[in-house]
Amino acid sequence: MKFFLDTADLAEIEEAASWGALAGVTTNPSLYARIGGRLDDFHNHIKRICDIVGPDCPVSAESVAMTRDEIVADGCKLAEIAPNVVVKIPTMVEGLAATHTLAGRGIPVNMTLCFTVPQALLAARAGARYISPFVGRFDDISEDGLFQLEQVCSAIGNYDFTANTVNGEKIEIIAASIRSANHVTQAALMGADIATVPFGVLKKMVQHPLTERGLDAFLKDWEKVQNA
Image 1 (tube, rainbow, N blue to C red):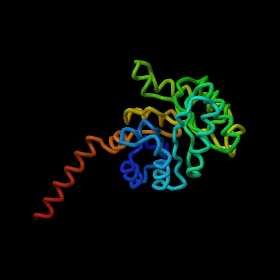
Image 2: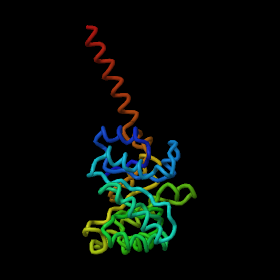
Image 3: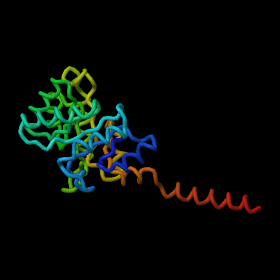
Image 4: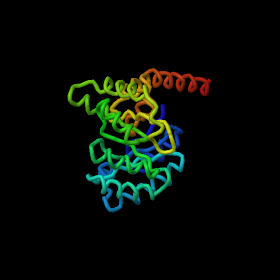
């Protein structure tokens, strides 16, 4: 499984990259606004992210447009920022049409806000390079988001969609709206290709009480050796 960081915070991206744990970034204007960013500077900020992660890490940048022509125009501008930019588009009729057009122009798309197998299959047929089923938002309404993710992974895995994607690449399923390390564990076990996680969850994934206990014991033993 690969890990995409879901953030607009440059410091978080640099830190995760230093661990060797970062395979990509997903972001949107709302995440940028949370760190004090302005919409008119969003494209410049995407460029800064691309400069940090390098050309081998895809950076999903979300379009804020709502009609197919506007999404295509916005997507083309986003794709011009750097060769590793992936246009993030919500699963809706206008989004499917825009995805089909952008894929035909060689621009990869991450279809987001996907909740069901039919939505995922339509996204795949439209030419999406990545499909992002949301887990946590199902949990928010007391439904099983992991079960829905498993259904999407199984359904997409049944078929070969490479004729639809840019450069004939395999569609990758992104476990999105991840809220916990357990979400990551279960997504990995069911075969999701990628987990997009907030930095706080990524840090928690490193931690475990037994690891902490082992480190404490090691430090105490080492102190004894030094004082001997």
